[in-house]
Length: 212
Image 1: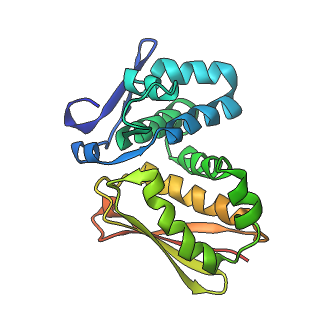
Image 2: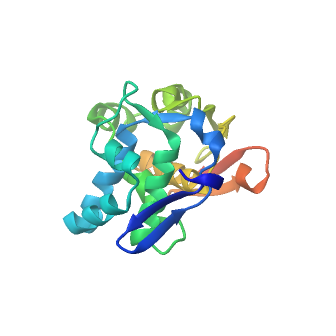
């Protein structure tokens, strides 16, 4: 993380810049597994050569996290998650954060099988809305809280409260996670639409999720 809050990495002779990772993110931590998931996503979508490009362009700290060589009891700075997501988007995407959403969806499929087979596929969204927010602190430390509110038979609002370091890449990844989580059950045409975002100066990060 360089001066001014940007993440910069080298790929050959090119500098890849990942803007918007500010100093306030320093206190927020995520599970190191979320970094390794990004490496697994690249390997699955873009092969071994793509993974090599990603690792070469990554900062030393991100490479260390990708290799699982992390101190801190499995927690790493949130800034590394954002660096990884933005780097993937810049190297392999169109720069529109569409790949951030795909990363979030991929991450939802990597959860323990028990959640997919015994929970996600069988329980109604109303129960998900009560249970899943309690798991937020297992994935984020000093990262505020997640709220899920059922607003109709086929709709819910997802709110991220008090997150110290909001970032558009994180919001897009959360949208993908929400979509893929609901896809575990008998639901189709799932859409996650951003309603508010604190990066635009609004008071919360809020998305509306619908399905049928």
